[in-house]
Length: 243
Image (cartoon, rainbow, N blue to C red; front, side, top):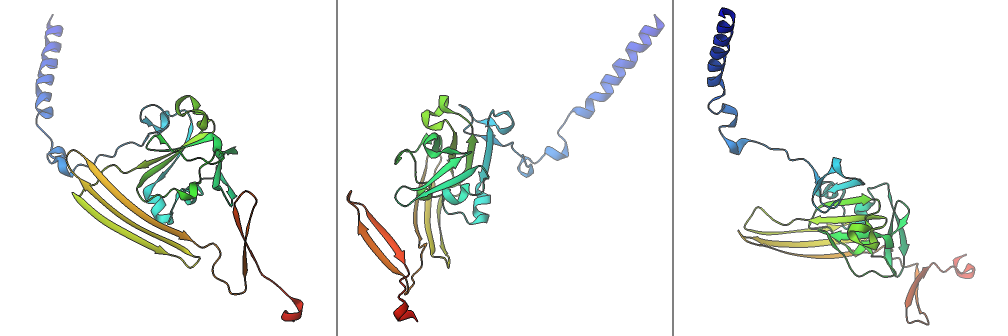
């Protein structure tokens, strides 16, 4: 009995002595403003609700806005060039069409904040016409997702996540870009943030002269029976005049 009584007394004293060590806030958490919380990365597209990238069933590539800004990306075509699984088919009428792991763009869904884009021509969307001046991140999901996003998602999904808030009450910003190869990219952004809603207005002018002005080049335009107009550029060469 003496042994049992001594053992119980020691446990009681130990528990009483250890309680004050846990009471009261520590100095580390007194000021919550200085605390930094690193949130884990989530994917918006892989499932019905945001899912952690490690729990997603498909292969996922994410392009952050910081990466796009450092690379000087202007539209979706240039952004997807950073991924090894994407290839392009160029058409003079239909524009740029992508291939995701060899699957044509007719089977690749393009979404903006989870909403499918419309305006397909011959089953594809010209991705060179999609600007990225309000993008938070781009999610590229490889694999069949037709059960969630329809028959256009048999090969994969490209989801463009846009910014839906701002820190300032009112914001006005702009940027301009000129390149010697004939690229002009001018953007103007404005937004108003209140407690209940957020309004964002953005404008963009983009021009790309793939073939700069050349006095020696001859440009010909000719019409087709279906009403289309084609343009052809060539360098004429006459041996009698050139030699």
